[in-house]
Image (cartoon, rainbow, N blue to C red; front, side, top):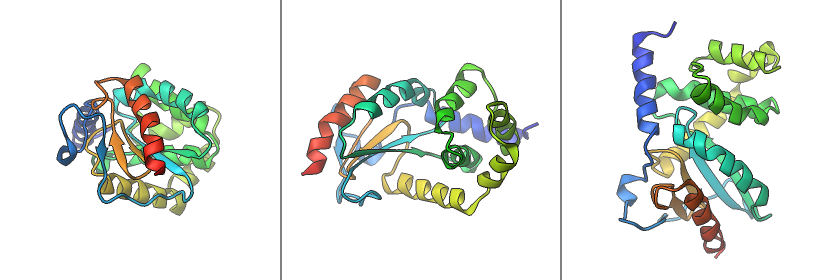
Amino acid sequence: MLSPKIIRILAAAALTATTFLSPASHAQGTQQYVPINPPLPSDTPGKVEVLEFFAYTCPHCAAIEPLVEDWAKTKPEDVVLKQVPIAFNAGMKPLQQLYYTLLALDRADLHPKVFTAIHGEHKRLFDKKAMGEWVTAQGVDRAKFDSVFDSFSVQTQVQRATQLAEAYRIEGTPSFAVGGKFMTSPVMAGNSYEGALKEVDRLIPMARN
């Protein structure tokens, strides 16, 4: 059973993640994007990197996930989508580890199912034990999961995700960074999931320049 302290932390995280937020210092009225000045370097040289900052506790991230999946299938060849899990506090770190563990185990297909489990089935996937039981039910070897979950590689990727969130000053999810030059989000795009992805499409040619 989770302690009252952890429950409070996760509840606060969920509340934070339920609101579309752009970086406070970037907010500019009804503008559909904000420039990043100076631009931030990409981890994928030669490509236009689109970062989606998300949290598994965020219902808006759960709602936009199918649209992001569809968008990724039609994106330009020189565009790379990277999804970046956010931890607004220490209690959310295991959720970051879960995402990168699924990638390492070649089970990215379970990524959208995590949203379904948390928001649709109301499963409390907030710690390693609960996550391990859930992934085992999805056909993942428990010993492999436990080993990868605490691995140096996963810890390094979690650290990098946190660095990116700090560099882009992410205060809410979902948020999209395009080419290290622009930020947009559903709230900037008229509180529209579809609008946010259309704005990403519009920003990609600008990011190429």
